[in-house]
Image (cartoon, rainbow, N blue to C red; front, top):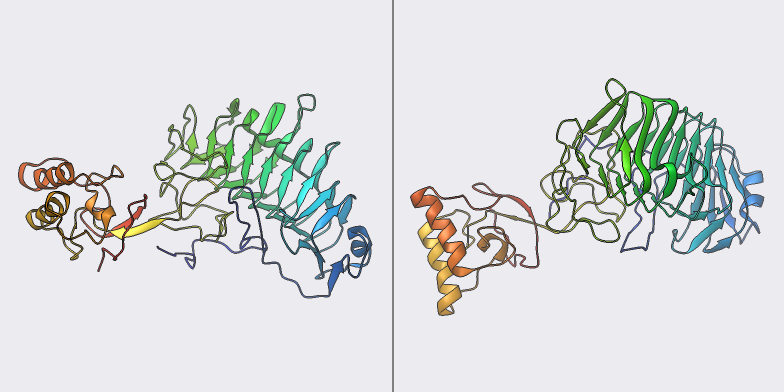
Length: 410
C-alpha cells in the first residue's frame, strides 16, 4: 500500500488532519488545531458547554465528554470546541454559532430541526471539521465570513421544501471559503440542497467533496472565481453551475456532464455510505495540485493511497504494487514463461502465483488461466490488447479480493 501523505502538494490546516472514520456511519476525529491555552473539560469542570464557553479565551480548548447536550453554543473567540470521542458519541441538539477569529468546532453530531445546525457569521478563519451535521433546516450556514474552512464533515438529511436557502452547506456573501473533503448527501430544498453559494460569494474553493442524492441543486453557484476540483456530483435533482469567469470546474464526476477539463459523466459506483468501490472511475482520477486538498480523508486514511488522488470525499485504500502479467513475480514480464506458469497453476496444480492481481492479466477481477494467458501471449506476439494497467512498468492498482501474498514489484 502506498502512502504519499507527506507530499508538499497537500495542505495542512487547523482541520487538515481530521481523522473521522466512516465505517460506514461511525465517525471519530482529531483535528489538528493550534491550542496554546487552557484545557476546559465538560462536564467534569463545567456542567454545560455554554458554561465553559463563557470563560474560554483565545487558544483554549474545551474538551467535551460523550453525551447529549441540548443547548445553543457560541464559539465567540479563537478557541476550540472538541468532542473527545467523536460524533458517534457526542451530540449537540441546538445551534452552534462561530464568530470572531479562528474559532474551531470538531467532532460532534449537531442537529437543529428548527434552524441552522452550524452558523458561521462575520467570522475570520473559522474551522468546522470532522462533524456529522444532520436533521436541521440548514446544515452549515456561513454568512459574510472570510477564510472559513469546512472540512471532512458528513452533512446529510438537512433542509426543507419551504426555505430556499436550506439544505447542506450554504454560503452567503463569503470570501475565500474552502469546502473540502465533505460527504454531502440526502439533503433537500426547493432550490439548492447540496452546496449553494448566494449573493456574490468570491474565491470559493470546493475540493474532494461527494455531493450525491440531494433533492434540489447539488450545486448552485452565485459567486465569482469559484473553483471546484476532484468532486462528485451524482444523483442530485439538478446543478446550477453558472459559467466562466464565475466558475472553474475540473477533474470532477458530474452526472450529465458539463464543460471543464477532466470531467467524467460516469456512475461513480459508490456504496450506500458514499465510499468508492473497487471499480469506481473516481479512483486515481483526481489531481494532486487541487487547491484546498487535505492530508487525510473522512476515514482517516492518507489522501493518496493508490497511484494518484481519487475524486470525491473518500480515498480507495486497498491497493497493490504490481506489473500486470508478471505472474511469477520475478520483476519482469516474460510472456511465455509467465503464461506457462499461469497455465501450470490452473490446469496442472502447479505453483501458486505469488500475486494473483498480477496474474489477472485482463484486470477483470478474476484469474482465468486460459483467458489471461491468451491475453498475455496475443499482445506480445500478434499485437493484441495489452494487459490492464499497471503495465508495462510497475505501478499501483486498486485491489480486488485477489490480493498479493508477495510484493510483485522490485
